[in-house]
Image 1 (cartoon, rainbow, N blue to C red):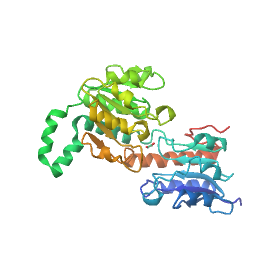
Image 2: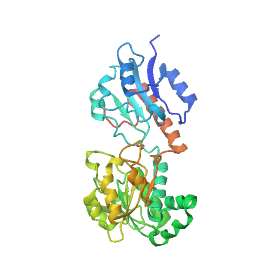
Image 3: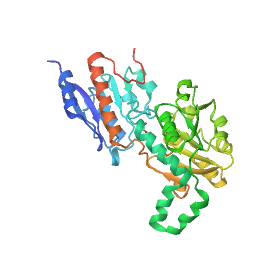
Image 4: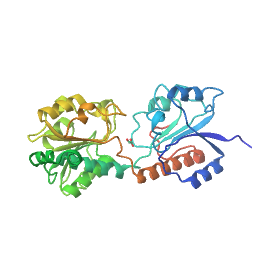
Length: 346
Ligand SMILES: O=CC(=O)O
């Protein structure tokens, strides 16, 4: 009988798992699951070496999020790790939409499929964005603080807070998540929608009562909108896409800034200056430039609502992660090709 094929499972303390289906797939393709428990990326590299316990792995599956504590924020698919992968490795399945922490070019050059889990957490992230949009106008997070610690400070909000009702939303990235955010903001607040992205999406524009307006640059869009939501992938082109120049273009009354994409897309120093000058009047940030951790000056600013990158954290996302990872493992071992690769292995 052929030896079992090792699959390295990077599990999470919080994850959904269709155990019966994983067991059935393991039995069908003679898979042996081994479980990642490295304390550091260096330990991971050691274990990938000849004679090491991970030296014959055929697939890596990162289900859910990495555990908190020493395993959190290890980056097992980064440029410095890829050269350590054994020749046997042919498939990586990683929960989540973004794949900016994986070196896709290097992984592809090694002949390894890389799959994300598209559309798995659209609903969860879009709902988080909706809440942050409201917060960026109404400062409800600050009001919570007042309820706990200083009731009468909340009275100042009477002059500062406004409603998002019938205001203009500007979405950067009208993909699955950006579109869902825009539709929710239209349905909940009657907001009209402008958007920016690499190309116009005429069909998506027509999904709104008042067709969405396309701008070929973010600079062109900012003077038209009351609130900007970042929902695009993080790439060299989107690094610091909101900085001093962009904030200076805010319309009278000020801009609100919501980020549910990646922290490095905003220059946080420039954001703090824009909050100081009144170019930006509210912000809601789920993601941060230096995760895990939040800029202390942002923490001190009552106009900023902060979350610890939990946009995705909802049971529906975890169930979808597990299902899509399973679909990819099953398709790869059955046909040689996974279902949702972001790269192409010829
Ligand atoms: O941040 C979450 C994701 O990329 O899915």
